[in-house]
Structure formats: structure tokens, C-alpha cells
Length: 253
Image (cartoon, rainbow, N blue to C red; front, side, top):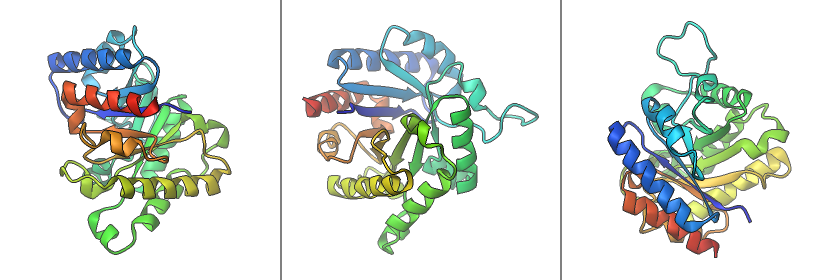
């Protein structure tokens, strides 16, 4: 059985001192569980290299929150996957905030997935619907469209480097999480889409993201198709993040 994968997305938060404290707490929490839980964190870009060195003696993975759809070149302000390879193991791609606030289209997301793969990094591909789409009964169609667009041309021999994070946009940062049954239903639907696309998608972890916290983590992770959590605000609280890691370990027993 594949261990649960918990990723803390710090977004545009933390001073460097705060980041050091959070990474130390994540290390301690992961070490306390042994190997039953995979743990990753995505600090802001400026902290990545220093924190990568800080976790060398642990099983916590450092990832990046985003990357450029381009490779190196005259692209002022862009951070490429080839640069991030020096300090990250995985990169989040297509987060709903990137789509909503920065206009990232499915085509841009597909290009970013390709850049991540070129560097032999893991891609955490985010998909999810807004509230109006869910209320209109379009949630599955939206998620399927996002998946197939982002994974067009994706090589089947690289499925072990792909993670899907289902994040209902209406639940991100709102404090209103999808129910465990809602999460399970959509994660199961995603598995079906992936199986049809690739034939066998067992190598792909499917996470839930959207106001996941220490209170609902265990219930979410008991669902058979929820293979992990993409965690926002709770990952900035050491005790809450540690409790979620422990919950994942308890579920795995």
C-alpha cells in the first residue's frame, strides 16, 4: 500500500526564521511516524535552497509552489523548473490561485507539467471546480477537462512522477471543506479518468486539498481513493500539521 502523501503549501507566508521553525517541526513530526507517511512542504522561493540543506537528514521533501512555463531565457522574473531542480523534489502546477489570479490556462498548465518532467521532478497537478460549476452540476466535466488538457501527451512511463491534487476552489481558504464523501466521490472519478487515459493509474497519488485540517484529516484519509492531502493554512501551524501527519500514520496502521 502506498503511504499517504501530505504536502504543506505555505503560499506567500513566513519569514525565514518562521520557515526554519516550521521545517524543523515537520521533520520532527515525520520522524515520529517512521515511514508510514510521506511529507512535503513548499516554502516561498527565497527559502528553498537553505531549507533543502536543513532537511538533508530527514525524509521531508522540499517542493516549489510554481514554475515557469518556459525554460531559461529572456523572461524577466520567471523561475524555471531547471533552476528549481537544484533545490526541490516536486513542483505544484496549476494551483487554483494561479489559474484565478494570474490567468493560467490549461495550455499554460500543460507546458508547466512538461517543464517539470524534463527535469525529472515530480509534478503535483491541481484540478478543481468553482462553486457555480458545482451547483450547476458541472464539477466532473470541469475536472475531467482540466485533467485531460494538462496531461495531453504525457508519457505513460513517467506516471510515478505525477500526483493529482483535487482542490474544490470553493473550499480553499474558506474554512469550508468538502465532506469526506464529496472528496471520495471526486477522487474516485479522477481515478476513473486516469485509468481510461493511461490504462493503469495505480502509480498516481490523488490528494484532496481545500481547508483540510487536523479535525478532518483522519476522516478524509480513511476514504479509499483519497491518497493524501494538500494543506494550506493548517501547514503553517506546527501542532496542527503534526497532528495531521500523525492522523495519516494512524490510518495506515
